[in-house]
Image (cartoon, rainbow, N blue to C red):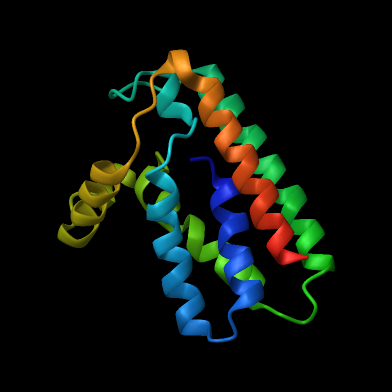
Length: 152
């Protein structure tokens, strides 16, 4: 799943749970739960095999980051003095930040804890075939709308 739906679900958790440790735990768990449903991400382009990054991958990630920043700015101005909204959003994307960022993922995966995290992440991750990409886009749009409705 792209970062934006993950972050918005984590932010929705933060908006509705007043216990910070519980926000962090639920946000991290939400990441794994969302990754079990059909969704579109850069692995979908490549039939989820090992691949070298291409221009379309960079464009997808850049678009996702721009969308994430837009939602972050909107939420920042409407957090109702509740920092848990931003904290939940951060912890909901933390797994992807640790496991998928090309600059450090190969190094971290050599460390036992992070190798285990990667194995779990891979095991639960839904493998959507490219011909069904539109299903994965629709599920993410639904997650974004639903999560955002719980933040307001």
